[in-house]
Length: 335
Image (cartoon, rainbow, N blue to C red; front, side):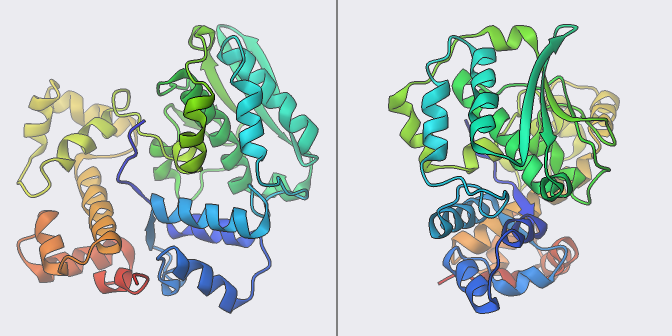
């Protein structure tokens, strides 16, 4: 599974920290240990890399011996994910693995349960909150849905498409991120929160074993939260094409030709996915710039040039518009 160069909103970090009772000094120390400048928490438009999010998640899981840090009334002790994987890896196919997934958490969690059923050629995995804390915590629900989907993709050895994803709540502020989180159409204000798979997709055998498990666990939660589905979603294909040519003046006409679309069809398909060519290009520039600022010591002007800005002032202006902070703010977390 190829990990994307995407970043995530700072709200993801707030959500991760909110489940724990932390003193300000302790919170700052945790953020600095994974290279996140604490000042970014005060900027609503700030972003962090997926590596930083995953690093903070793993750090908190270790510190609190809870693989879902503070999300539920009962902690999931270290080793829970490993035993979950061991319990599903011997399944005959993916639908059997999903059934074991539902039963595993029925034994461990009091705050929610999963229901698995099939109708009209679709298999539905529904998440049913049993406590107000989880009912109101959309982040906790999304984490458990992403775990189910990410595990199914890992077990299949390929990226599992979804027929649809339903959420009981209204569109969140970060709804534009859903195209990177869920490979299928998302619907809000629905009666139940659920993932829908095509039944035929779940009949394939398990393609993982105990030898591949350690690598999957070592990268958690990155592999089951942030998976690229480029071959299925047009906006991802556009992003991948642009990423190799960021320092070039690539136009939408160039991309349409390279991806074998007419200009009109490409624009329409992107619109159906809730985005546009310019939005994809700007988001990619933003994300790659953040990756380089947090992972390298390259001069800011050079990073701007590498993401397509000849003028450093123009890059600074654009970066502050994207994130609410100047590029230098993303260097304060590096040691």
